[in-house]
Image (tube, rainbow over all chains, first blue to last red; front, side):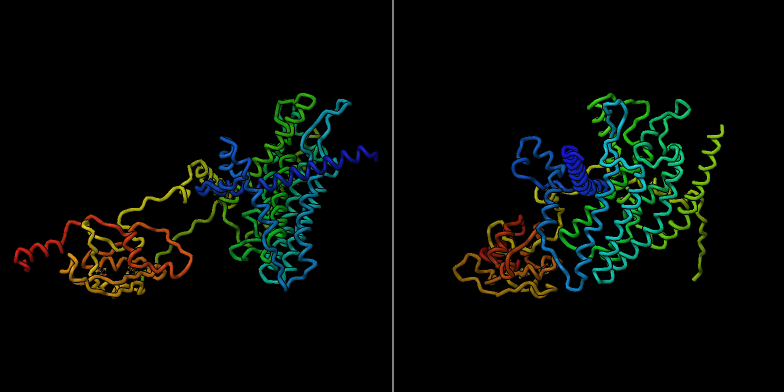
Length: 363
Length: 180
Ligand code: SF4
Ligand code: SF4
């Protein structure tokens, strides 16, 4: 590999990481704001950075919006006292937040965020690594994240984190299956490709020449199952069994504080963002809007990236909206829902679409 | 006791999926999102205190500036957590209020003990002690939170009062009819 190419790749990776980290930080802010408006409060609106916050008109507005809050939160995580309980298994205790954090960051390398036209005139994805097995990579790596949670719960050597860790593993196993099965019809629909870019582009094509084919329209059940499983996999309410602060104190991260907790926290939000990205690519047409073709060149790429970004943002908002609407499931309900409802449903769904697609191809 | 059996309808298929309920819930929270916040931004905005609010107990003077408390110690007696301590004293002969005879030499209310029950205000025969609308109270030491007489009068101030009981008594005495 040539040096310039290498530098370019590293730069792209750094950009991607900083964007995702920034998004995760602002997702925390968004979460707090959404929680606030749903509960009839203004939310964080005091944090002010001396120089920026003093600009007339704009300063007060961004202060009210809480845009400086993530900086304050981050600093707090960095500089708070870092407790290190005596009874923990030190190595694994330190390792756990990293293991939770790294997969969440790794999955994003296969997420295409937009399109651009190459010199040859073909469309190419803006992505760090355009893997042919893109979605499999995401499924495989993102489920590694649960090891961080299990390890954190186990190494903390106290009962509530331990219960949280066990719940995380059980939940992960139960929902991973339904998630994978719900995706198979999507791949079959788009001719067996596992490449996220191909699937997203496939949704721009017209079915029978006039119907735009967003997968969610044709396979609502697959989308529903995938979405529910996504909630469970990212440990978001109503499936936040590993944390469930009402019965497990704070679940797997009970013994963690300051920066280590921050890693878990940012990891969770990165998971949510990447998960939303995958959902948008698979079911909501990625950056495509029906009947709209992007102009070539920089402008088109920018447009595609913003549309994709907007869709992801809407989905992240949906995650939060759900969180502040629904109460948590009971643990046995989570298990029953996973094994007795979603899994059979996913299998039935798969069989149905297998037959349907075979029939469509016949005629 | 007669028992009434309540019939429980089995969940319909739609209800079993939870989805209609979830959508209803989402609608409710969305409606809430569009409403303005209901909170006050505390240090800048303060709640309006309704009349009859039981805040910090204070001593008050009558419109002539006479201290109303006659140190009968009823409030000290009635106070459930024993927050009040009174050292009674005599009013000197030279004072124009000499006929009132007694006034507190020292009057202490320990704000850390006070439970803001308002019994002292209710029991006081002279209407000398009132719970006012002060609701935020803090200090750096325990001693600071024991309010002395001077401070109690400072925050109590004067309340409008048209009885002028002791003034009338003095007038009656001067006109030779003390037991009117
Ligand atoms: S405040 Fe009222 S009840 Fe208390 S000692 Fe004075 S006169 Fe008596
Ligand atoms: S309000 Fe109640 S507790 Fe407080 S000083 Fe009066 S009688 Fe005592």
